[in-house]
Length: 475
Image 1 (tube, one colour):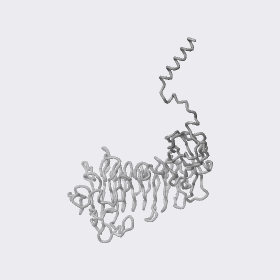
Image 2 (spheres, rainbow, N blue to C red; image 1 turned 135 degrees about the horizontal axis):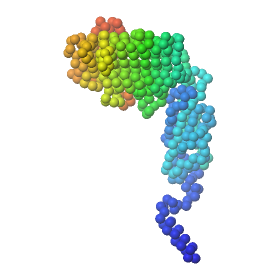
Image 3 (cartoon, rainbow, N blue to C red; image 1 turned 60 degrees about the vertical axis):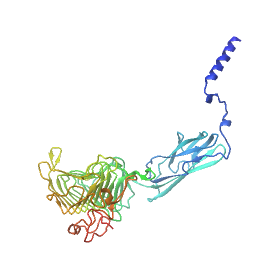
Image 4 (cartoon, rainbow, N blue to C red; image 1 turned 90 degrees about the vertical axis):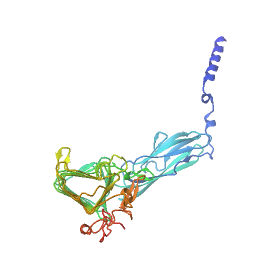
């Protein structure tokens, strides 16, 4: 008796010391409900992916499943209506699969559901809708569903591809997605025709050891971009961010590169031109939002016209040696992600202590501006720079007549200054439109002598007898 009495006393002490939550002896039936009126709520009733590439798993979307009732709800089964044939994959409260059983959502609680898609190859080479439904079967027998949908696009995956001979990419091809860089071999050539888009995976780029021709048009430009088609936020596509892919690297063996109506954006860099054997020609194009140099010219011959080069972590345009001519270019340094950004334009006779003599660098009817107090930096060293600006609007002191000829300083004395010169610079959604504002200092500051060589702007707008500086004519 004494022994039992001791055990009873010990048990009562343990119970007294336990927290209230552990004292509950409610059964499952008392804490969960099978009432058909008790249902789940979802943070989204439709999960819509942007256009996706077939055969490539998308990034993951998620939604919440809420139980706002006073008792828990048992989900007997969560499944994809098409059983995985659509390519959708789900993870419900930590469980992967296409058919998941026995999930509980406690009262006033929630769980995550994650969704991704590996879209199967389509029978047609056009955008095809893909849809499925996630079916939630509750213990009460109630069925609830969340729709999942996307548009799938067949793609040609090029991984570590080296092109020999002559190749053409056209808009009638299925889109090319490039992994581990695309290389144009020495003595080989690549032509990218109007309307073509090349999608590059993170870190992949275009390396040209032979020759490259990009032949877009006003209505059908050629686009080089990253392969992420999704969004960081509802208002922000990844395509507006920097560093989504590599860039274009022109090797010293490159026999020549012509680029017309190209949109090159969101790379680690734009174009690096490394002492190429041939000539680089860029017209009617855009290099925008890059994490390194926009256009880097080393000991090269380059002609750039009607082109926008904007928002680079390093310099938008860097020139070390060689010869270069810029006509009607907008060079705008409004890189948004780091205040420690480079210049809009940097020109030097030196890389470190090595001499790279600028034989000539000329700018005609150009517009060079940005956030800084001075956006043009010249490093002549002991050798004078052979540098000239004609009828341009520049964010720098333009009083030195040795370099500046009929130029205008982008100054706060004018109604528009720096970023207010342009139509839209949205640093929240990273949307930029560098066409001119009606009050822009660049209006009518160009010379018709030079605009006669380029009588229409990048979008085909006639310049007339009073050309604006830069690649856009105000309309």
